[in-house]
Amino acid sequence: MDKARFNKGMRIRKQVLGPQHVARSWADAQGDELMQPLQEMITEIGWGAVWGRPGLERKTRSMLNLAMLSALNRPHEFEIHMRGAIRNGVSKTETREILIQVACYAGFPAAIDSFRIAKRIFAEHEAAKPKQKKR
Image (cartoon, rainbow, N blue to C red; front, side):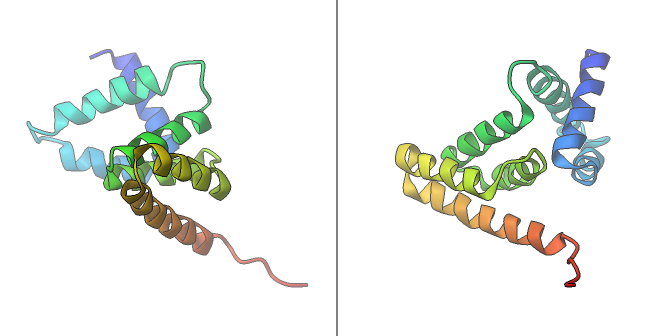
């Protein structure tokens, strides 16, 4: 394992997905001979080598992930990356347009499932915002 690339990947992974999510994923895999090597590989290669590359902003990478995960009909990963996309500045309008594109090219069922997840995640995100007092 390339320790520098792994550390870079861990930093990026926490920034995009949130430290709590990463800590849970990491804790679930520790000492598990089946899962631990995969978590290490995801962190070093996926997050360190790929997400850590220059050339695309994180927002763009998040938008690509939403499209691919929706098209592949991977709702669990879509949900995780939907939360990361919001952290990376992807708006509700941009999400809608990504999923309409998915519907056209990958099918309506995959897009509908992703729309449902996105709607729930945006509602949770809005509910978690501090309420502003009226003057």
